[in-house]
Image (cartoon, rainbow, N blue to C red; front, side, top):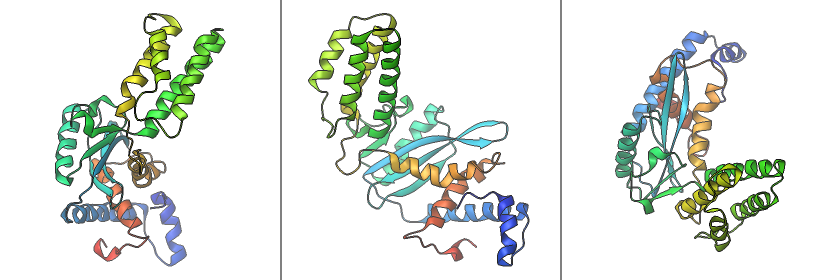
Length: 271
């Protein structure tokens, strides 16, 4: 749970009058993960209003592996499912997302801007994570601003600064602001060089503005990213790679279980 390597756990155990090799520790963790996964799947189906989905790479020797996380956002949410699917496997991703949406009765799908998630549900039910959208558009605008300054193009530099201000403005307007529309018109005919890059960014911001979540409670998909970080990434940083996919998938269930409810979990269920 704390991200310790199996070798570090092996060195720690004698301090609490226990002995165990790193191989036996790895085996015990794997077995516990499989038991927790079965308990999770046998539990009553979670019902959520918003389903957060995000994929991440999984460190495995000789493979470009990936896993897909399904998380319930908002009150009563949490880890719903982990599937051994890479985000590039378009058909599988879309089938699984549609099935989980139906299973949990979700009204809204919330993701980043990866094209694989487009068209799974009607457009009004698929909303983009505000944090991811602001970060990606802001980074691009900042990079173009720096390029404009380097090329001594003050108009483009000022336009990108104005765009950054619009992206950061709170509260965020539900529809694209008139100022953004005017910037789009100004560069609509640009076809090359820096103005063309500015044109493409402005059009993309305008096109996606109303697709971004405006949930008054939490318009982000940050909860899904936190689950990924706390249940898988923290473990991946202390090892060279998992040896098998079932260990990759089982570990998030185990880590989520260990964090428990209010910091408490019943280890008798898995040991």
